[in-house]
Amino acid sequence: MAEVREETESNSPLDVAPRTAAAYLDPHYWDERFAAEEHYEWFKDYSHFQHLLRPFLNPSHSVLEIGCGNSRLCEELRRDGVADITCVDISPVAVERMQNRLRDMGLEGIKVVQANMLDMPFGGESFDVVIEKGTMDVLFVDSGDPWKPRPATVDKVMKMLQGVHKVLKPEGTFISISFGQPHFRRPLFEGQGFTWAVDWKTFGEGFHYFFYTLKKGRRMSDNKECGSETPSIPSISLLHEELEDENYIFRTTICEELET
Image (cartoon, rainbow, N blue to C red; front, side, top):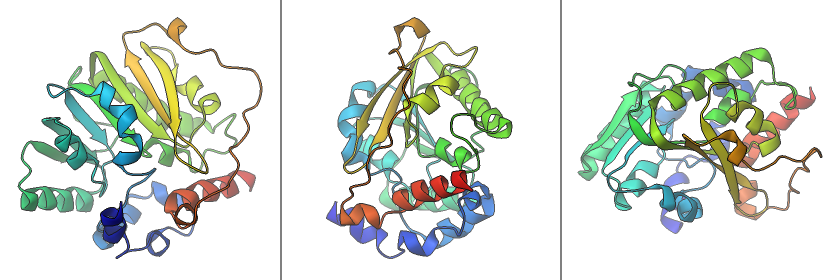
């Protein structure tokens, strides 16, 4: 962890965070950010959820990471034995910098492709595992009421999920790491036409991140039942490092947007 923190301190999250959450939807913002920022891990680094992800990994699996940015997740997956990894990001700056970094490190077999998560350039049933870490959450920054998101937000999210469902192999697994609570995410994950079952666990201190697993080919009836009560927002009792983290800024900014 000390090594990761040292790498991220050259550009503080406070230096690159946008003035409003809506800027997260602007591709130009990400180009400018990735040009200045070497490394940042949304929703914690691999060490915090490795125990949750490892059971879904196999050396023979093909893995797609959506919204790789300047994360080091693909490198960690390679160290865990995954040989076939593809990373996509909408920013050509992020893609070029990651390609250069991987080449300088001598890491072969990790493909980095510029692509929009709403229109991914892959054929059907191409990947055993698809991972996104905070990428889908960006689509919700101007969603309005979390219980009834704006139709435009729902359309984007469903388009992304349809693309993920398409590229997953039979019995493949989609892993979504998110701030979004199950009461808000399940209605979207369980949309018409999806043949996957939804499960989730949590990790993190202070407030929780949700680790969703959507297993393709299983019936919806296998899912956990969802209670009718309104979920309580986890109390904000955070460590100092969490308070300085953009994940916290991102979450509270979204809350402010929803209140206006």
